[in-house]
Length: 408
Image (cartoon, rainbow, N blue to C red; front, side, top):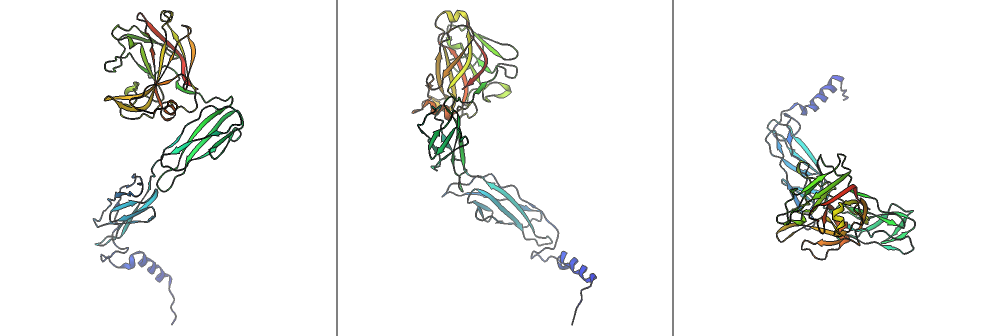
């Protein structure tokens, strides 16, 4: 017998299929019944753990029907589910479905959450070897990864230098840009550090610690130093300068009981506290904001003194670099500090350059041992620069700084 499906019959069949065959929901699931929604809060944020540890998170979805939910992972190589607990197996995208089977008049429903499981960071330590002569002697590179992974070197300046393994061949004057990379894996993210090595006559790029001496209408510093409690104030000093901030003059007439009040500190590299006030380096841990040295070799600034102080012949100026390397010492917060002393040759404004490697020394180690000056400069930011008189002149000790303070 031959059957022919009419247009009316086809339309009816299609309608019934869309309605679940026209039957009522019996509580056994299926597509029939009222629609329901599933609230599935974002479960991401937790990083993968390093084996043998396994990080887990707990899911907490709810269905508008009030019915129970089940969870399944659609990326089982990245994450698995047992009950409401997700095990994070490696870094990557984890996809979880929250399912409600339906019943009691409700249609089945599913809601998905897709999130990234972050990998653990790794630290690559690659210190710039500094300026190099243009000669045929290969330059040996050294870098380490905190994970113990091998580090590979590449260069993006092949006309200036080439890299083979851990050896650099110097080809021309210029900046040799070398990148040290530790590859990632299922648990650690890849990490790279780039250094610019001056070859021959080339110089490192100039870094500006402070471009001017303005800071929200006030000078970017705190004045005076009380050695008893480290309070900073301006009871015996007179800061002044033009409105454009192109220069700054600090005048101190320190009392006999506090000769080191002829001291002031400049903050740069984003070191700003509440209400626009300058802030001391961190008192809770390492402070990573600030100026980061690459291959820069010297601190440069323009300084003038008052004639009376200069005439004493005891006109030396201490220059200290306060680093973000923090430690507690004798129960007090301490930041590793480098110190150099410059003796102005004339009272008038003069440009000075202080070598970072050959003139600075570690003056405050904060109780830490084995510190290496160049490593400290490479690994930690310079948060502040402190100027002080080696021997303040009691009648008037005056400094004038003009123009930016830079490193190059």
